[in-house]
Length: 117
Image (cartoon, rainbow, N blue to C red; front, side, top):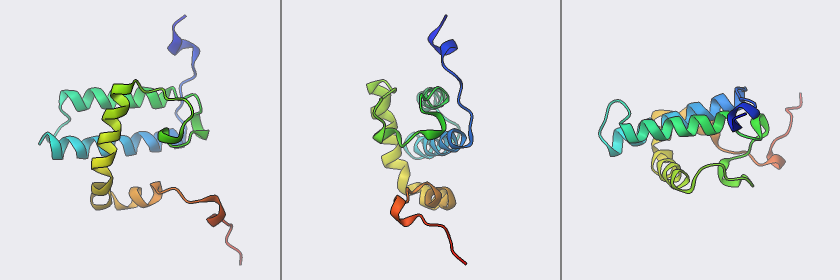
């Protein structure tokens, strides 16, 4: 039995959101760095890798940011690539996708409180 068959495929709302944000960041990176309207081969391959890794994330809907995860499931070369993409695309996300950028900013637990009426 293959490794992928043993693991359960994640497709919850948190994973879908992470996939959407990662795909947008990769698109911005490719457009700005490689001057392509569609994803180039290198960026398309990175996007497929990221989507696969997120689909099989061990933590599923309880996942933290990949940088804070105790298990690094990305191969080192892909980890460096996606870090570079995120560093470059992060500021551009505020311009191209402002709502997703603001929603993606982590809020400390002590600031999260229910609204009282």
